[in-house]
Structures are given as structure tokens and as C-alpha cells.
Length: 215
Image (tube, rainbow, N blue to C red; front, side):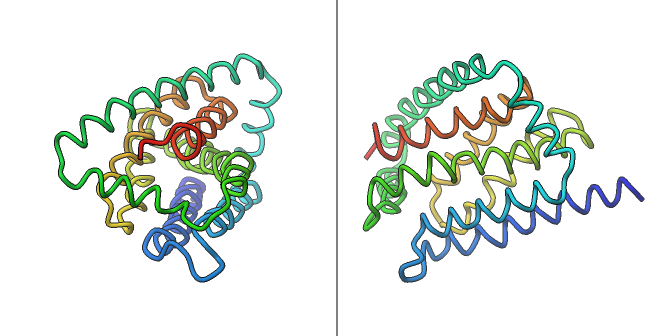
């Protein structure tokens, strides 16, 4: 009974994430409620639900914050640089192999159109980036690993993370989400640190979207 309830919570919040993100990627915004406000609202809902419904999530997060903070920050910076290098090479390879790659990548950067750079940066740095790691790795992957083991938990969480991007009908975005999901999933599986992952995710997002874009 307990295992069934635990699994129900895991997949219930995964379904909630899909319900929140699929319309986001399909519509990209509704009037003044643009992509970034919508993404931020989703982040608040998912992290709040994780914190309220999963006591293990709260304990793991607080424990993580209290140990080796500076090492985790440095490791997060280094891992973000490694992932950026992977995408730097992948950007050139994809454009050489696929005629549609440039258009798909351009559409991703189209999310920034009409949005103030400062607002995008603040939302990524203080809300969206942290919340994605706290939910996808800290909640979903952690629980999947506990039930199915590290490898299966990492892969399934990454596939679900990538799958919600399919509604964008953007092959390059889905592929990027899968690569990121596997990379950050492996990072979390190895070091068990939401803090490390948050630093890595935030810095990579800022580098790709604002500081050193590939457009």
C-alpha cells in the first residue's frame, strides 16, 4: 500500500508537470502571460507541491544545503562549462548535418522576443533554473531511483523531461532537453546534490540564452 501510494505521488506530480508544460510549449504564451511568466508560474507550482507532499524531498534539500556548499558551487560551475562545451560542438555538428537545425535553434531563441533581458535573467537565475532541478532531479529522479535503481531512475526521468518538450514540435529543443536531462541526471545520481545541480543548470541556462547564445 505504501509503495503504491509513493508511486502514485511520483507519477501524479509527473502528470501535473506535463499538464503545466505541454500547453506552455504548444502555445508559448497567452497575451501578457508570456513564455517566461508562464514558466515561472509552473516552477512555483511544482516546487511547492514537492515541498508540501514529499517530506523526503524537504529533508534531502535541507541536508544538502548544510554540507560542502562551496565545493558544490565550484562543481556546478565546472559542470556547466562542460555542458556548454558539449552544446557548442553539438550546435556546429547539428547545423552541418540537418538543414532544419538552424531554424529550430532560432525558434528556441524566439522565446526571448519581446521579453526584457533583465526579467529573463532574473527568472532563470532565481526561479526557473533552480525549480527545474529541484523538481526533475530532486523530486522525480530521486523517487524513481529509490524504486527502480540509479540507472533506470536517471533514464526515465530524463525521457519524461524531454517528452514534455515534444509539444513544441521542435526537434532540436527536444534533443537538447534529452541531453540536458541525461547530463544533469547523471550528475545528480553521482553526487546526490540538488545544490550542485541548481548551480550547473542556472549557469548553463544563462550562458546559452543570454551570455553566449548560439544564434
